[in-house]
Image (cartoon, rainbow, N blue to C red; front, side, top):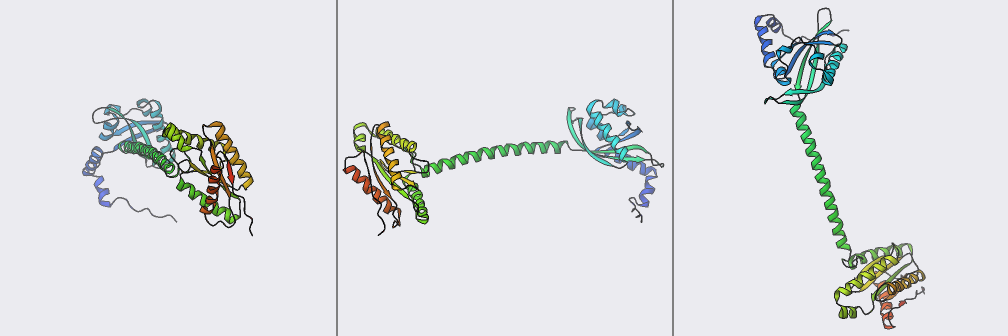
Length: 340
């Protein structure tokens, strides 16, 4: 069932359009409408002639009254004219209004030629026989909106760049702060506080899964004498040398911390006493061979009865003291006590 189309004009307005006042109404609208309006005569599928242009159209793209009656192809050659003709032909073929965006050259208020953007509505006009004879167009100027959007996009890109740059800076600062909070500035080993935290976690894991765990305490032989004879700068150099040898000799999984002064604490996870002894002797030999000092070491293994890190470290520290008393540059270790 065909629906009756609701009227879009009142009878009084229809009557007005048939009068001189109606003609004045349409002319006033045509002359003062702020957007571009134009009427194109359809001569053929690709043949379109300019019939009328309102003042806004003349101002915006510089088409003057002498251009009336010209063919679009003659007035707008090249790619711009090709795009205009393509859209006109599309509207004629569809037989219905179409919308599209277009770009072109316009003349601004200073008389300068500028590149502009418009949203165009094209409406086919049919005669009583249903033949499309004209196209009526209204083009809304999007130039300022497009320029504002492009400026906003540029600002957003700049903001994203600044945010990315600032984020990288903050991450670098945070990374540096994390290093300062966990590392000894002189030797790059873990500082004592962080080393104890890591060691306590390793001890809990070893106790939970009954894994072997060894602690190694070492210090530099006659370190006070080095400082007294050569100065603290020389002592710092020796500390850095020993720390470097430790890193290069032990495994990545072994934890190394500067426990205080010239004393280092090393935790050797998942390694029984015999394997830890080999690592300790290899380390002692490497320090003696590559630096200007020697080290003494004390080694202890986790006992099943150990409930705190202090118990394990106390045994390793006692072995270190024994190594110092027995002549230095040596390793002493606490034997594993079998459960009774």
